[in-house]
Amino acid sequence: MDPLQFLVPLGWLSVVGPAIPFAILTLAVANVATRHRAHTKHVEQAADSDSVDQYLPHVFTNFGLVLVSFLFTLINPTGGAIISVIAVTILVADLFEHEARNVEARNEMEIEKPKSTIAASSLVLIYAIYYVLHALNATFWSGLFA
Image 1 (cartoon, rainbow, N blue to C red):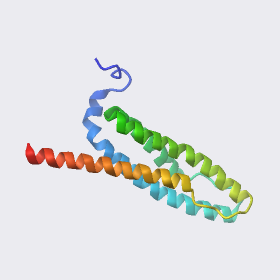
Image 2 (tube, rainbow, N blue to C red; image 1 turned 90 degrees about the vertical axis):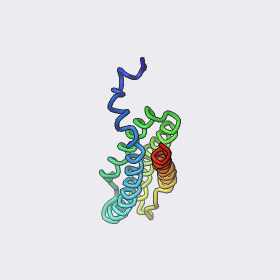
Image 3 (cartoon, one colour; image 1 turned 60 degrees about the horizontal axis):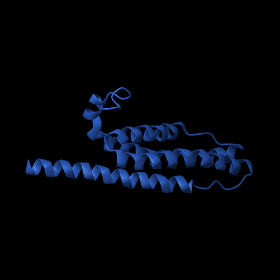
Image 4 (cartoon, one colour; image 1 turned 135 degrees about the vertical axis):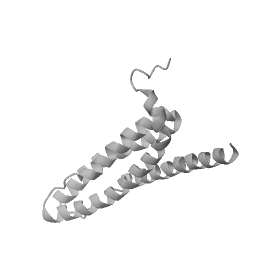
C-alpha cells in the first residue's frame, strides 16, 4: 500500500505522468515570455505613475509552474524536488523583484530587468529541456528495441 494514495489519487497520475515534463517545459517557456511582457508593462506603468502592478498572466505561469513541478515530484522524486526548489525560488524572487520595481518607480529610477528571476527561470528552462529530451529519447529507444 502506497502511503500517498489517500492524499493524491495515484491512478490518474500514472496516466498523465509521462506528459508532465512537457507541461513543465510549456509553462517554463510561457513564464519566460510573460516575464518579458511584464517587464515592458512595468516600464510603461513606471513612466505613467509611481507604482507597478503584477502582470496577471505571469502570476498564473508562476503558480502553474510550482504546482506542476510539485506534481512531477510524485512521478520522479529527485528531479521533481530539484525543479520544485527552483520553481519556488522563482516565485519568491518574483515577489522581491516586484517590490524592487515599485521602489524604482516611486523614486523615478530606471526600471531594471529582474536579473535573479531571469537566471532562475533559465535554470528551470534548461532542466525542463533535459527532462523532455530524456523522455523523448527513452521513448525512441524503447520503441526501436522493443
